Length: 184
Image (cartoon, rainbow, N blue to C red; front, side, top):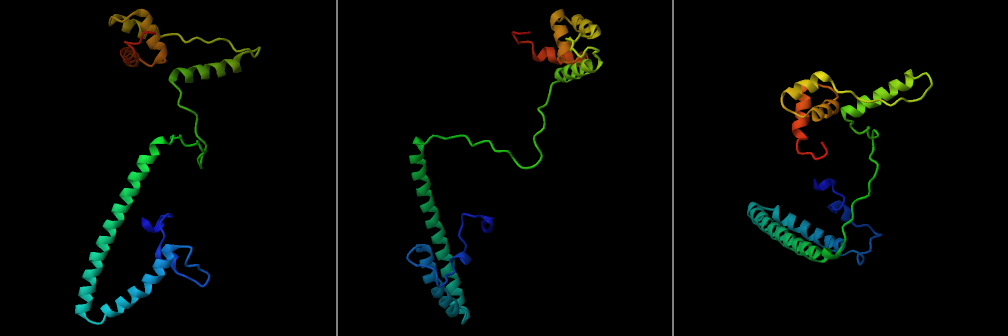
């Protein structure tokens, strides 16, 4: 809404006081000249219905002409700005910390969650305090069912491990989505 925009000057901002210098701002000067003229026209138009209807029609036509003139003027300025802005480099905005709650941790895959939990568990259970290396083992049930469907045994193991032994359907979905992967 225009009333909330900070870049638009409103009529109440142009009211003059004894400290205003008319030479410094052309818009304030024009506003101060137009205000008494429009007030006189208001008084003349309010005297009878004929003057009122004529004045309303004139003001509506004038308003439309001023709006069209302002749009044409702004389009010309935009076109000038576009033609000269080609040489300017566009920089990315600086990253600024936003207000509110701090950002959460990134979303982890199931394998990362399992490995993290098992490493934490190994730390608690280890008598010497040393972290033992933990390897995920593929469920033989999942691997055998996928192998029966015609998939490669090693690929079935990778699928079972990458889906954290969630089930045959998840492993098969993972296999199908990574079928064209050369690292598989």
